[in-house]
Image (cartoon, rainbow, N blue to C red):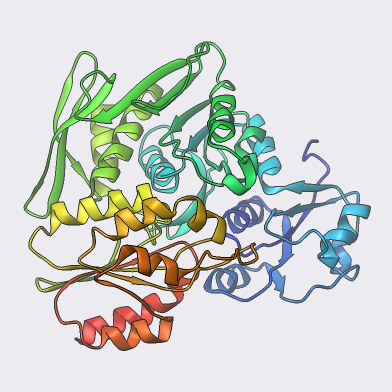
Length: 454
């Protein structure tokens, strides 16, 4: 399919982070854009303020009249929408309809798409890559899975740029619809087993994505990933991994700044300043440095971009930062992500008590990785577990937050959002973390206000 005859885009599920990025992109390109979402949110408020018409009831066949024209309207939907939703059923019979990932695939055919894939780190890494490129002589457009603190948006539009940075999402095998020019793969820890079925099938999905990079195409990947080289130009990276082609050493915290040395094949960049703290963010910065160097950016451009990068909202995002009390909100929802978060906190604040407030995301993920959740959450000084956020799933018998609390043991408790806020009234010092990918972010403003008051 081509976009040549399309004048209007209609989004079903427009309030999602990926869908809203596409809606903003096409609005900025001069197309008419409208859509549906289930409930209002700060993001839908922003879209409406930008001139995009949004409604919150299923209109069935009565979608807005101007979007009834089947020749000039393309409908885009997210797999999170139920298949029996009235508007979706109607448009699938009458309109050209594509998934979000298929539209991203079309965009990668008309630009040099730089994909960022991985179970963890892809949002921060893609946003960091987009920022460094946007500050360089190359420039780029970008479609991001989070709100960039530098751009204050999840999309960047530059009509004259050759490159587009795209978060390559493994959910629903979406990334297999892309045609990347080059890519980064940050991690391949099994996830979404409700989609893939087995760990082996999950790894095969990433191998299939890697195989899209034909001979001499560039693939930057974390050292040690179980990938077979099948003709692509592969460059590995890692912290304290001298066998990797690009590696970091001397990671340290100095005068409020995170620094490391970056080693390439024939040169070393000493004391590269990172805008974000954390071991995992240092790894992300290595991947971005490797990609940008291969694309032709100078050392000065890369150093400047990494130093000035402010991160992504809900990724190691400081809410309160005083000498006695620190509050950080983070999207971590997999045991490996929680491990990276807690290890970074221990490095930054070795003498402070660390309290984590965690909302499990999906019954299936909680079941599949229960052992890992118990182990990593058990490393907190105190673990508060909220009820499981179901998203698209029905409950699974025996899979509960109570069971997680029981297995974590001492220093673990179950609390509702209201009880979490009551608990916060007594906190005066230490490090507080809110952790999870569900709707835990809704208590962040109230929690921040309470802790600032304390």
